[in-house]
Length: 414
Image (tube, rainbow, N blue to C red; front, side, top):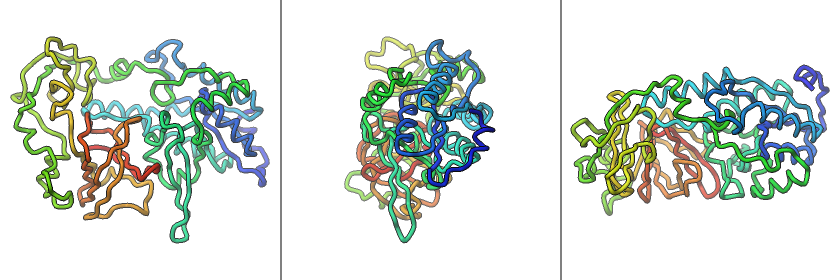
C-alpha cells in the first residue's frame, strides 16, 4: 500500500496510529509486532538514507536487502508499508556534519545526530502527515512519565537489557520528541526479542545486527572519510608522560569542586594544547583527520614497548600527538567542558543555572559503564568533573548524564 493510499485512510478515532521505523532488523520487526498485538494501528516505514554502495561492505547489510526484509515483515504482519527516501536530509544533516567535524579534528557521533535530526524530526514529521500519534523504533530504552507542578514530564530510561541499553544514542531528544516516541522492546532482553521473532516466523529472526553508521550499513570509515578528506602525510609525535602540561590537570586534594577557580577548571577540563616541540617523531600518518583521541590501532609504530595511544590531533598542522601506555596522563583526564550553547537538558525542570552544581552518573561513549561526576554550571558552559579519570575524552563526542536509570541531559564536548 503506497503513501497516497495511506493518506486516504479514514482515521480510526478508537485506535492510536503509530508509524514504525522498520529498518530490516529484528528489533524494529518485533517492535511492529508488539504494537499491533497491543491494539495500535501500525504502519511500517523504511528510511532510505544512503545511495552510495561504493563505501559499504558487500553483503554486509546493504540497504536493498534491508528494505526487502522490512517489506516482508510488514507483509507477514499484515500492515501497510512504504519506503521513504531521506537521503538528501541525511547527507545535509549527518554526513556533511561528519566530514566537517573530522576535518576540524573532532570526533562526531552520527548515530546520536541521526536520532535527533532524522528519526525524531524528519521521519516524525513524515509520520505526522499520515496522522500518526506516535513514531516507534527498535531502540533498547524505555519511556516513562511523571507529573510535576500539574505538567506531564517524559522520561528517557535505560533499556532493561544492560548489554543493549541504547539510551545514550537518544540523549539529545527533547520533551516534544519524547512525547511522540514509543520504544516497544525496551523492557525486553535481546534473547527475548529474537525468541518472539522466531515464534512469529519473521524473516529477520536470525539476522545479524548492523554495526555500521545509522541506516547506511557497515561502512569502511576511512574510505567514507576519503570521499572528501584526502590522505596527507604528517608526523606522529610522542609526548613524554613527564611533560609540564600535566602538572595541573588533576583535581587538587581536599578541595571542594565549587571552590575551584577559573584557571583550575580550565586546566582540568579543557583539552591540552601541544606544539611541535612537545614531542619526538616516532612515525608518520596519512592524515590527522582520520584519527581520534584514545585511538590505538592504525598508528603502525613499532618498537615502543608499551602501546601508543593518540592523546591529541592537530588537523591544521596535520600532526598527531601520542602517549606511551594506558596510564599516560594525556590520555586520562579528570574533567571536560561543554560550551553553554551545546548543553542540552532532556529534563528541562532539572536544568542547572549558572553557579549551581549537581552530582550525576555520566558516560562519554556507548556501553561505557556509568561513572560518578560533579556538574558545575557557569555562564560560559558546563564543567564536568569525574570521580575517576576517564580515558580518551575527545572533542565532538557527547557526554550524557544520568540519575539512576534516567538520562537527564547531554552535551557536545569542547
